[in-house]
Length: 267
Image 1 (cartoon, rainbow, N blue to C red):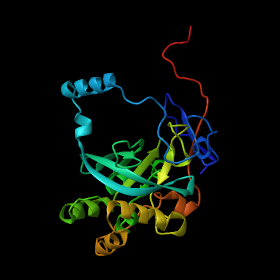
Image 2: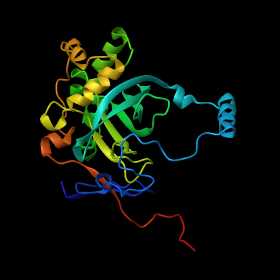
Image 3: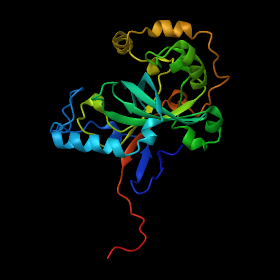
Image 4: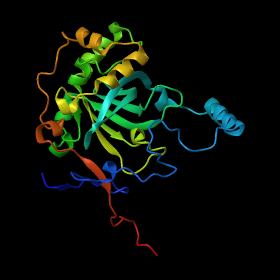
C-alpha cells in the first residue's frame, strides 16, 4: 500500500494517511480543550425560551429517523492510530434492514451524553462486496461479542442471544468525531477511525475499564463470556478487516487544502 492513500470526500476533502495526522495530534490547551476528560461542553445553560421551542417542535415535527432507534449496547473502542487510547461507548442502534445497522455513538447513557461518533454495521455478505481498500477501514465484531465486552443493558437473554449471534458475523466502521477522552470540550480536528477490541495484547481492553463499566451497569463481562462459549463463531474473518493485526499499521485522518470543485468560476 502506498504511504499516502487518498479517499476524497468532497467538499470536506479529507485525506487518509498512514502517518502522524490531525486525528493523532493533541490540540493546544484552549477553552475548547482542557486536557481533562469528563469536562462539560462550554456554553450557557438552557433557557426557558429554548425549552419552549423544543417542546413546541416536538409536538408538531416528525422524528422518524430517531424513532427507528430500538436498541442500546455498551461496549469499548480503540483508536485506530493509537491502540493505547481506549474508550467506553454507548451505541444507540437502528436497523435499516437485516444486513445493515447504523449506530449513534455516545460517551455514556446519561441524558447529558455527548454524541461522539457514528458506526455502521454490515453483514459479512455486504462486506465481501466492498473494494479491498475500503475493507481495510472496517473491523470485525466476533471477539468483542464472544468476550462479553458487547453488552445490552437490561435486555433479556432470550432477545439478546439471536441478535448477538448475528452481530458476531458482522463488520463495523466507526468514526469518532469528538475525542472527549483527551479533554476536548468541543468536537475538534479531524475524525478518528476506531477499531474493535481483539484477543491480542495490543487490542485488549484494560481490565480496570471493563470493571468500571461492569460495576456501573451491574453486569459481569466474565459471566457474559462464559454464557457465550457455545455461541457459533464465523467460519473465518476476512483478512482485510482489522488491518492493524496483520500489518501493524493504523489509519489516521488529516485535513488538507485542495482545489474546490465548483459549478462556475468564482467572480
